[in-house]
View 1: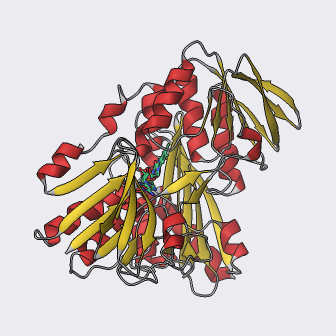
View 2: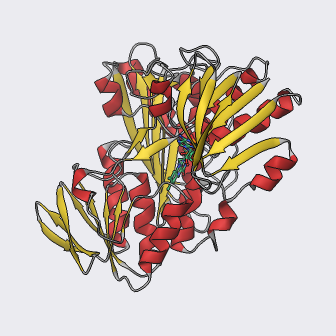
Length: 449
Ligand code: FAD
């Protein structure tokens, strides 16, 4: 059994390890076009911000460790084509400057996403970056030497995390967002405003409703970002305007792409082409709350999809259970989390959604350091089904999102949430935790309708 994996980060390495464990006789080869494997891209903003002392801390396993497990890892090897008739891939060895073909019985495409480079950013100016991998992280850190003003384009979670990181490094930071608010794809408006207020409280100049038109430079280095509201001076620019699934090889293999634009797979992570699997950020998944296909490129999803693909490629039988749209991020002293669908998303899907907002404290008010927490809980009129939650509060306090995520996985109702026996002691929560208060209130709203 020859298993070839393309891409050596979360999905690819999970799959390779799992396949070897499932079938120790399998010959597993990983081709990675970059110079590193198996690292936590999610930690990049924290190395740039200085909380984590070095990029090497993000590396979970080295190529040597993987080779010791019997996995043949080839760095700087880019797979450029797939031939499903001969069951071979074409590989370009970047170091040696030559190409060769490699046979496979099972092939996994774990090629991730590409960061979007808008046309206005395609100049040759230095100190203009996206942030996807370790090389980008190192390049950003190098650009910070001598820089005092940063401009971040894009108010998604990576842009927000980078705003904090660059403020931690002492830079003046301007964040430009085309939409009306930051965190537009994650939260409803009121929660978005709370996040923006936190950024502003920490000195970030947030300009929403601003469209970037171009870049200007001096001596080959960026000096300002041109916008419809005038120029923004900047010594370093971070472009964080979104990602696109990297589907080039899937298309070369003739695998079907879904409506989301990402690779379509079945529950075993197999594409429409027999023997060709896909996993991770390049792949769409099934949303258990809406029943729709979605492309939500996140770390746990990538690892889990890789694990499922690895088992199946090696002859086992595993299924990907789908996702419920859970996400979390930190911006300075604030955490924001969501799972399921927001009120706005539910309305967009034609669901009869009702939401309640509850403002409380994250633990007993009388116990030291009680901090505000905002919960917006959403349910469905008629069925009483739980649809989602958003939380904004101290970073650790919003991890309660997992309670609702667990219930959403089981198709739970608002009443099910209200009935949960949640842990209580004054340093951790109020006797009626804010989630229970929200469920009680939402339950009454739904009954009154
Ligand atoms: P990737 O990590 O993108 O790996 C794909 C690999 O495939 C790359 O190394 C690429 O070089 C290689 N490749 C592509 N094409 C080829 C080819 N033709 N030949 C050979 N190799 C190829 N997720 C969260 O859940 N929580 C977070 O807090 C979070 N924070 C993040 C912060 C940042 C800054 C970034 C960039 C991502 C963050 N993510 C977060 C997302 C998370 O990192 C990704 O979901 C995860 O890395 C996806 O893993 P993957 O293996 O699918 O793809």
